[in-house]
Image (cartoon, rainbow, N blue to C red):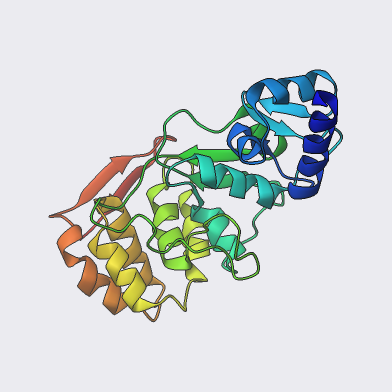
Length: 247
């Protein structure tokens, strides 16, 4: 009877959990599989283990988007942002095919080793926005994957990318990418700039928009005026370059 029940639960797992997706103890528990039984399935070769409490089916090829959706359920604030989100939403400038994913979240500690091994990524918790901005503002999934992980809209992704300038993002590339962001929504960008807490981000956005003659430049300056700080803003980048931004 016990063996029959174990076999029945295993068949249910194979039916209810799509192939190519990781799954954890919580999902297994919802299907009636205890941690002890999951360990038995692992020892018997019916489940593979990616990391602590994370499983897959043996010989499964994990899909990137399903893994991102899995992480979005486990990591607070997790989303695809910055340069990756811009590229996925159609704003790019010669993005290499093996460019690391730009991923964001609220939890320290980085991404699981198994995910990094499969999908090289850069994870940051350096949120450029104030706590007054709703956590899910500008973070819908892509239209073609409505059940997928959150992906920053272009307006949010642009400011996230600018926050990485001088850290992981080269200046020239960021400016080239921004040149293609001509159709940003002024109301969405305005809300984000009003809640931006970094002078560097606000100034780069306003000054480059004006230099590039982007259609939303005037709106950016108007809404960001209280975030631009006073006088000149200077910062020495990791490569030794001195970044000087006027008001």
